[in-house]
Image (cartoon, rainbow, N blue to C red):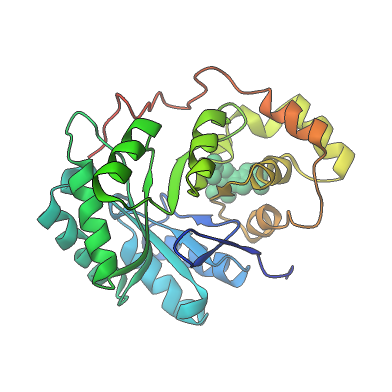
Amino acid sequence: MPDAIPTIPLNDGTHMPAVGFGTYKLNGADGVATMVRALHNGYRLLDSAFNYENEGAVGAALRKSGVPRDEIRVTSKLPGRRHAYDRALATIEESLYRTGLDHLDIYLIHWPNPQTGLYVEAWQALVEARRRGLVRTIGVCNFLPEHLDRIILETGVAPAINQIELHPYFPQAPQRDYDSSHAIVTQAWSPLGRANDLLGHATIADIARQHGRSIAQVILRWQVQLGTVPLPKATSDARQVENRSIFDFALTAADMDTITALGRKDGRLADQDPSRYEEF
Ligand code: A2P
């Protein structure tokens, strides 16, 4: 197995692996087996959500893997239908029951749902959950600067993490700049574009050839060098190992610019603009 995945510091004094493992659609016994493989292949951050309906599988994988609990970071996320303060706290408690853990390492608000308009309340609940020791690190997903400004202004607490859609068609430069200027780490969901045509892109293939790497490795390395934390999901041992073996080469500044230049004005995969799109 390659060396341990490096970690990066968060603004609350904790650390997080520089590459995590996405668990969307990993459910049931097959999902547990895939997550156990990921842990045995050295992943130490499992990214789940209440709405993935696999928090139980995550907890089972953690126990089955034999990896010590304190070496693993488990993330879950608060769904849009549970933003009201009391419901949010009860949902976090439910996430604990589902995982069978006594705390979650990271808890994020899944979507801001600005039309619903309860995300400040949800954030207050996460702050309280951290105070009670239910969760260690709190953050958000899919928050735009206007949403972040508001929760920081109204609670005085900045999130440690903002998890957003990020891949070469959607490099998110303004949001990344906002996050880093507020000491918020940006995590990338769908880092491989959910295996769309990016994985055969001729421009990235050229760069990959020059480095003797795969296209997936170049995309994930690009994300790491941007200062973001990708959360790729992969089923087989070979892909799991491939996706985390990105810390023994570096892209040049020109490579970085070439990949970033593939970005499109709205390169979102499924038109999920958080100012309009709501998920419950
Ligand atoms: P599989 O789960 O069969 O391994 P994303 O992380 O952007 O959501 O993309 C996940 C998709 O990318 C999955 O369909 C996964 O397939 C595929 N995938 C993951 N790693 C690789 C890789 N190294 N090469 C090609 N496809 C990959």
